Length: 200
Length: 200
Image (tube, rainbow over all chains, first blue to last red; front, side):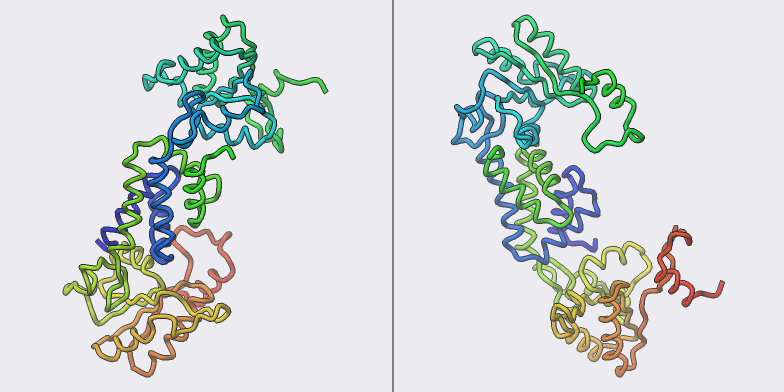
């Protein structure tokens, strides 16, 4: 019992966050201890207001503030509402927006199908996606789940249920990432880059 | 403006912590968003009570709770109070305690001499160290500042002011770290390991 209780508690709370091990957690706690009070206070306030002020958009289930529903993107008349990009998590929207290449709207599933953990399509926002597709003039659905086993399974399931609606279904291209080195590319990526080779 | 204000605020607060870049900060914020409310709350509470409940030990200047002064170590009658180990920061005590090889007490300087930044010995707890040494039957001072330029400068300064008191002064041994590889050891370390070679 060298470290005292308030520090131990903070170390424990930091340690619960992903990617923060016991050593980093301790470093962060001691860092805040020698910083002005306001710094720890600002983080504490941000944590509290996070949960108080945030809700999900009733249209696309992206994160929004409680006083702004539907969210900014769904309310934006400049955007192309006939295109819906389906993502796993709210955090997937940011990188897509940063590309500046997408002007459609989104739909957040809040997870992926994980049969081993008993998470089926009914646990995701799939019903809500279907009713959006049925009630609106949507012409294209872009499946932007992650390029891994669970993301693929989810995309394949969505494809099966959307196909009967006669809507154009696309997914993000597979291939070599920018700046990649053939020598170090993994077999899956290189295989897909070869299969999906494009006219040049 | 994709990310909404409460998230942006939390990302900014996390991003201010050492070793947490903008991407990690965002990952942490979104992680907390999908966890139960209690988790963000627990971290917020720990942050608030950190500053409210903590003070410095009036003897060794280690961190302690406001209702426990002197700290646990200074109060411990089992420990050898004739030996004082001088460290830069409160966080340096934990690793020393973990070795289980030290049964003396500590003195925390709260910094090092940094002439370039105008931090001199008078900005550290050196006066307090001297008065502890003068008023008590201390037989050994172990200088455990970090083995870098600033730590060395500070240790050398302390040595000069403690020497007249006739107290035995030691410092942590320099040499190759456990598990090191001669081939990759840096010149400074290897040079010191050679200079301070020990009987075997």
